[in-house]
Length: 441
Image (cartoon, rainbow, N blue to C red; front, side, top):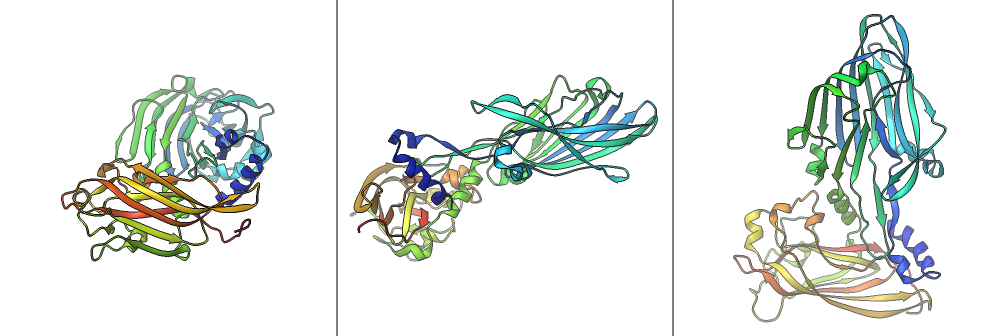
């Protein structure tokens, strides 16, 4: 489990370092691949690229690449060596070959007769590049094939592979939530030589990002101008594409909505860790269990209409290390319903837990209380498949072994809806089961 794997080494580090060190972010995930490249002539030959179609499909953190080439050989029949360059972080030597294989796989190249043999070669000297403000050693691997080109004839080639896009995710014990970097697909067109004076006569790129966008992805940049499209399908078409003028395609996108949603779902409290869930009041059909039913069309709704004592909900826990608390504010089943019910503006959160001290090997009861003001999120930003940006975080306790016993939320102020009743669609108590006993209780 992510928390158990990372918390213990960091707590041990705490014993020999200052508390300020713990707030420093540390990398937890990255791709072995920095960029891939265009099919390249590895020997000086006059081969003309009459047509190229590059079809890219975003799939989470990955890009599936399909490239079709139609080439003309104006000379005699020859067997020509072609290769595709892939730049890897040299750290892959430390992490092992599996890291590379997880980041670049399913490579194959075909011509009219079928699949071609592929040999792999590594450049001898690494190149130093700056990535995320750090110097990194990058090595280039070539995926090489020999292709028979007929005299004064045409040749069709198709290559395909899947690459894990460049990323650098980080973590810190100061926060329960990791930080997900933007994802970058980097494709270099610049060849080693040849290709009819570095021109592609007819060139087309199709980027299919529809599934990613459905999951909350935001496309931030497509590398160069000229793309058109709608609904997540982007197309670039041109003639006499100059490989020297536009040497790289860089597709930058933010995939964090999906990643945070998956993360939240993994660490949501389980029924076995809940002793009780109750509230000050509830309308019929809108009882507190609706807070934990994974259904955004249901909610806990207080019976009161903002008069008298403040409304509250309370949950008691067992064997659960609470790390963060959040809610889906209001009832976002549809736009009209969302603005019909009150959304919480200010609330008081109270948490009772056992705080463990590694130095004394003892625990003590701790009571935390804070008043939190919430943003009134517009309904247009709600995506039930990738709801994380819509989540209101009430508490972030960082990473620890502290077991929680009770959480209470008390409504202090609301953004008024038309029916004057306060609603919370979902309650998220994030952490993990831990029935270990620490210290002297």
